[in-house]
Image (tube, rainbow over all chains, first blue to last red; front, top):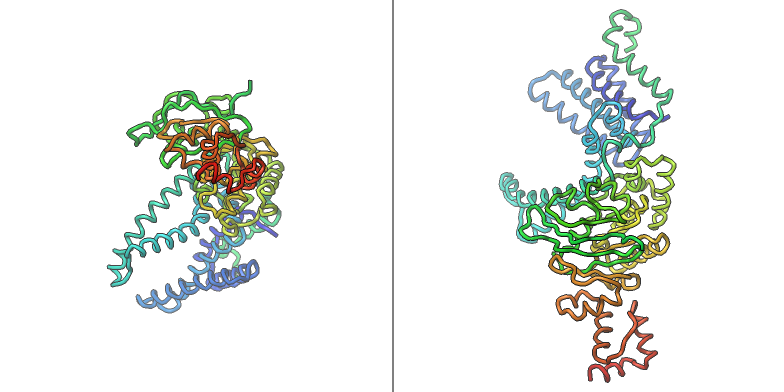
Length: 229
Length: 294
């Protein structure tokens, strides 16, 4: 069963709302569901590292809240909400191709083509940028660059790495822009892509989204059903 | 008479930031179906010439120009760069930065999708283009999973997929080792032979294209120094001390021998070919030394 990119965007947006409107135990159930889904999709080191990273970040958030005098339950619920929200995005990225997400954003949400394309391009160029930064760092180290000293000193000395790095990135972006122009990038880019089918599974998923999103409305009138949540 | 693949008529070009024209009075015809190599010292105007062929200059990047450039008989004036690219493909020197997608299949399909090719045909062309460059079945490979040489082949595949009549390659093997360079040019030659595509290649190391090149164009200080079939151009290049170093060693030796012995030799395409001809003429290494340089 594969959901449409549009459905995933809606689910992700809905989850960010649910963490505030649904009871805490339901949000905790969402967390469990998300973890099961993520580990079912890909039980790799990268996935575990991504989940672990978000877990550490959540822990830091909770610690900060406690440090600033928040009660323990408020800090824990705050952390839980943030974790569920971020995991929702991770679920979307793990299940849907970034191109499909970009296409859905253009077609269904009328996002300008250029902004949608930035999503895919950013992913494409992150490894290149990291590689370039290593090359630039090595090149500047050969010319005497040193990142020793206190934090301020290190930050200041890093400027000599940032400048050529930015210049390289700008030059590459010009080549990329030219390559896109040569290959006819424009309004048709997403319009001409093969259509993602909208299946019964999408309809069911959207119906569940609608039902849960309306929780504040029906929970008052149907307390018996609200009790399940 | 057949139209030239690309034709320059008294073409001048000056970059917006430049003080002098980068190209001056260019009159040049690229023969259809030829494998033309552009030679010249750094800064001579080779890349500017390539960009002018593809309409990038002056219509996309700007600058002042005079004269006309025609691609397959049609003027580039007023044409969209992407429309021209369907007839004249261009692979830039920085091939890495011109890859825009996340997977090999999407990369090759990018131009086809943008130009509204039906999904079935797009899929077919992607499959065939990848097979042609030696990357069959790699549609779903992430770009990070491909080596530098494979990414270069992928950039070529994305050109081949739209089946342009002319392909312009700006230093396509600049970042490759000799084996990789030879292998890519062998592949380009096979495509040239199979489809009859016109190739225009900027290449400093002409030894890689010796077996395949049909025409040479030498650019010097923004002007065409000499252009034409290899047999006519090589002696002219050898005669100009400034351009002679552009010739591969093998052809320099050939021209030197011709000058010293007064004999005429075939245009050697490989060391083996040179050795064979010298043997046929009874000019082993010792004989050559005796006659040419005692």
